[in-house]
Image (tube, rainbow, N blue to C red; front, side, top):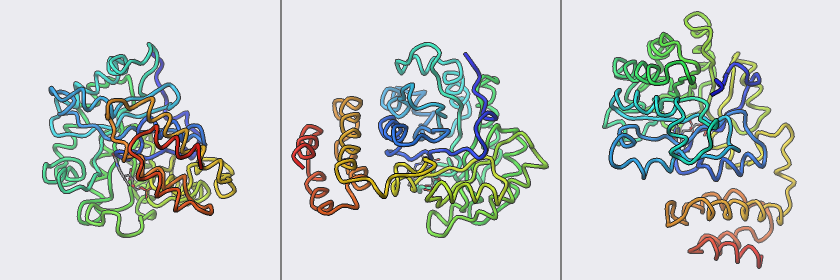
Length: 330
Ligand SMILES: Cc1cc2nc3c(=O)[nH]c(=O)nc-3n(C[C@H](O)[C@H](O)[C@H](O)COP(=O)(O)O)c2cc1C
């Protein structure tokens, strides 16, 4: 199996952010078709659930195809042993085989989520709560590195701090010699309520220069265009830029020259049709409920006369067939 090298990515490289219930294999393929990022992430997947009888339900979050490459599997959880077992399954390729992928096709890396601010995960001492529990965070990283055993890069995605910005936290992380560190430029307390602090992300990059020069630093937060991302990477000396919600404003955001604003009504409808067709072919037996498509409807069915009325019709549909019939008639 060839070892994917993050170092071979362009500078700066662009990453489609992990977004739970959004960046599944279907949406990633739609974006790949519009304008591919340099790197993809899966939605976050709980390792304690994966290593339990609940495994089949969680595996669907890891589904992917050869189109979405390179793809990092993002994991979270509580028990370092389960991080190690899962990392071994990912790095050996056995998990990809379990997902039905052919020999030689695998994830490109393993990322640990240490940034999710949700109440439930924090109450459970996981994700962003690990900022307050560096000992456990280090145990999880070391377990993952042991499981990956040099076969795949190991990275962390986190925030600037829990209640306030802290340099101890990125220092601890950088001492683990991660292959990549993504910093969302807000604290947990800030949730998504204030603008991302890119100057602070730049300070983490400066820390990296002295503590762990081989760790790639990716900045994240509020990037709405490729040009803006390139400017921020240049200003703060970053290796990569991760884009989450910006993709809702422009599915072609990763293009050098996005055509999105000039796309005709028919092209926008056709994009949603492709999404629905892929969804229907991928998620069967209500694996993902049909209403989860509504957030995508808002992306494509927009910026043309009559878009609002068409959206209303589409959002009330109860099956993929019905959605396709409405678009056919539109
Ligand atoms: C709907 C949604 C789901 C998210 N799910 C995840 C996730 O599974 N893992 C993760 O690390 N971050 C997750 N995030 C955070 C994003 O990856 C990103 O850090 C955040 O949205 C800030 O970047 P942005 O301003 O470019 O959107 C999620 C964000 C949103 C909006």
